[in-house]
Image (cartoon, rainbow, N blue to C red; front, side, top):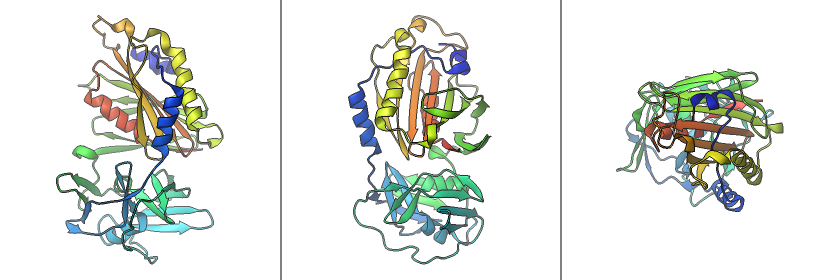
Length: 345
C-alpha cells in the first residue's frame, strides 16, 4: 500500500469482515462503565493523602475540587469555578483555590455507576475537552488529564501500588516520555492531540467520512528512524448526536465491504478498545499486493484501521501503515488516536 493512497482521501484497499451482532455486544459492554474506589496509595510531593477517587477503565479519576484544594499554594495550584446559569466548570491555572466547602470528604464505599459529565469545561477561559464523570453529584476528572492541563507530574509505581503527584515537575506521559500536547485551531473550536517528543503532527484538509458534517485531517509522523505513517480524521457527527453501537457498527461494516477485495486475510481479528467517554475498534490486515515484495519508501505491508465513537458527538477514523506488525510506533499511534480531544461545533 502506498502512502499517497490515504493522504488524498483515505481511499483504502483493505477490508474487514466482522459479525455485527457480536460487535454490537462487545461495544455495548465497553460502554457499560463501573467506578470502583481507587485502592492505590496516593502521594502528593512525597506525603500520603487520602483522596476520594475512583478507577474507571483502569484510569484514576479524582474529585476536581479535592485536587485543587490539596495543590493550592504549590507551583501547580489552580482554582475551580462553577457557572450555574450556563452549566459550566472553569479551571484557572496558577490561581489559589477558593474553598467551597466539602473538600476532602471521606472516601466513598462500593462500586458506583458513573455518568458522563454534561457540563461545559473551560480552562483559562477557553472551552476544553476533558474526560470527566459525575458520581453522586460530584465531578471526577481523569488524573492524567488534569496533570497534563495544569502541568504537574503524575507517576505510577506498580510494585508499591502507588500514585505519585509531583508539583515540582511538569507532566510526562506513561513511561516518562515528555508529552508534546498540541492544540490545532479549527473553524469553530480546536482539536488537542498529545504525542511524544520527536513526533510531528501536520494538519490537512478534512476528508468526508460517514455520519459527519465537519471533519479535519491530521498526519501522524514518528521520528525519522521509524517508517510508520498515519492519517487521522476527526469529525463532528450530524447534529452532534452520539452514534449508537448499531449505527457505529454499520459504518465499520459498510466501509469494510467497500475495501474487501485486496486483503490477504478474508476475516480480520476484531479488537474492541475501551475509550474514556466512548468506545472504539481496530484491526490489522495485510496488503495482498505487497506479499513477496520489498516495500519501496512509500509502500507498506500492513494496515491498521481504528474507529472511535465519542459520547459527545465526535467520530474519529484513523488509518495507520507499517512494515512491521505491532511495532512500538504503531502502539504509540493507537494511544495517540485514543487520546484525541476534539472541541468544535
